[in-house]
Image (cartoon, rainbow, N blue to C red; front, side):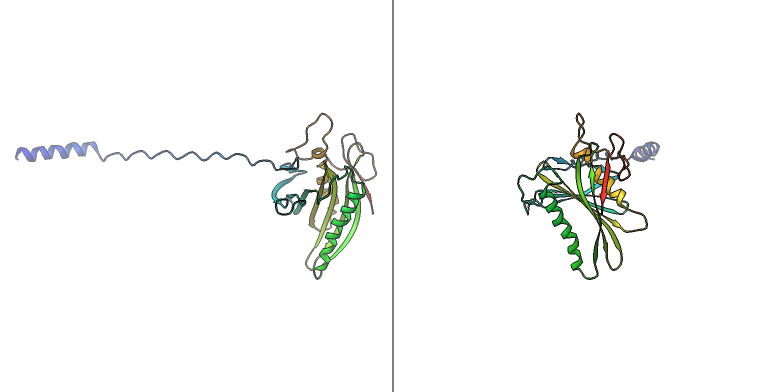
Amino acid sequence: MSSLLRLVFRVLLVLLALGPAAAPAPAPAPAPPQTAPAPRPEFFGLRFPVMVAGFPRSDIVNFETDKPGLGYAVKYSGNGWAIDVYIYDAGHKDIPDSPSSDVVRGHLAQARGDIFARQQAGGVKVEETGTFQISGPNRALRFICGSYLISEPARKIDSYLCLTTWKGKFVKYRLSTLHGAVSTAATAKRFVSGWIAVLWPAPGRRAMLDVPFRGRPAASGRSPARGCVWFSSKR
């Protein structure tokens, strides 16, 4: 065997002994982008909690940019409920800080008319099933409300409307769920009353922002325990 062939043979033996070349190590996967937590919405100074009475916050609608005076709507939902919380001034100035004022009661009547306007759609009937008020621990009137039964061709809906004022703005609540054998009024009242700690925190306490309201409404007409919310209803 010539010296050249012997050299080639030795090179082949060395390559066989070393085995196949190791594949390059894969590049490390890029770190996932750091996403900042979604900001808590705040409109006209009101910060909307991530959850109220067990209902999580969802979508936000901006009416104010295109139609000044209509403000903003923040949606809450869960367990078959659709809830909208509005803050706006409707072009009013110097809105009194009292739900019993003529301005607020007049605006409630207007919102009530919007609900009855649904009867203009064929086959829809609206009935007012009651009115009620929600007061705070010191029995200060906080919300004036109405309850309605909306009958459509294929379903019935329990609907609730509550209104208050806060720092020169209207704050309105619209709550709806399917009508059934079990009363839905307590759930609606519990959600709205949960906002008392947000809008009017107790002296020395900060407004509740991300803490669900865990209280249970006292029976109508009974004096509540200290720190509870109580309701007075009327037909």
